[in-house]
Amino acid sequence: MTNLGPEFSDSYIESIQEEYNRNGCIKFNQVIPTDEALGLGIELHSLITGKDNNAQWDGEFISDEERAKTKIFDLHEVQESSENFEHLRHDPRILGRLAVLLGGPVVYHHNKGFVKPGAHGDTYGGKFPPHQDYPFFPHYNYNMLAAIVYMTDITEDMGPVKVFPGSHHDGPRQTAEGRPYINPDEFPPQDAVTMTGKAGDMVAFNLNTVHMSGPNKSLMDRVSWLIQVTHPDSRPLNDHREPYQGEILWT
Ligand SMILES: O=C(O)CCC(=O)C(=O)O
Ligand SMILES: [Fe+2]
Image (tube, rainbow, N blue to C red; front, side, top):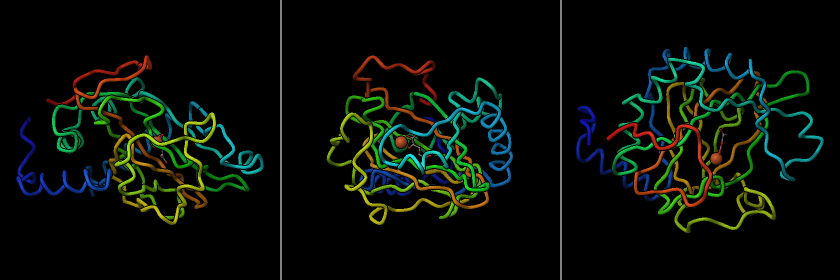
């Protein structure tokens, strides 16, 4: 594996692998210094809000009334619009950690930026129901993960990601009828760990780790960037392909 830097002692590597394998998720603080992350966040916010793409999921997990009031915006393959995000996609501070979690080379799948807007009048940032990422892009042996880099501070009232530790161990789960998500009654938010954090922190979780996020009722927009990667042995199990999927980001 490419040299990871002095902070990656053998015992540190072992401890993060153990935590990730046990919980199916792990948080790294200050992977990127706060000032740098906030700067990227300003750029990402303007790219995403400029496109106005509604990223709220279909389904009965919210009422029609709530749906009418809530919004989430996203932008796929942010590097197509920004040199800074092309660099971030290859950033050793991110990829070195992801290589440790995957236990080998890092293969690219896709990335997306999110803005979960804060409250304006009676509209606010929407939520994601509990789900595994597996139904969206099933992969052999499940050695695939999502890493979310925080581009603003994300407090409890800003709709942070919530993860259910250990929920990856039983593999892919039954989804709600005709939906990619799990019936919300099966994973109540009070059983989850809430991943609040500072700009520059990163949360990583396995393809089968159940996760969700609540509404953003704060006055601040929540900005984040998600990169999805796999180990080379974890091959796609269906015909779904992302435009830049397969690029080796780290060996
Ligand atoms: O950013 C979030 O709140 C979760 C996003 C997510 O889970 C997804 O896009 O699959
Ligand atoms: Fe997800």
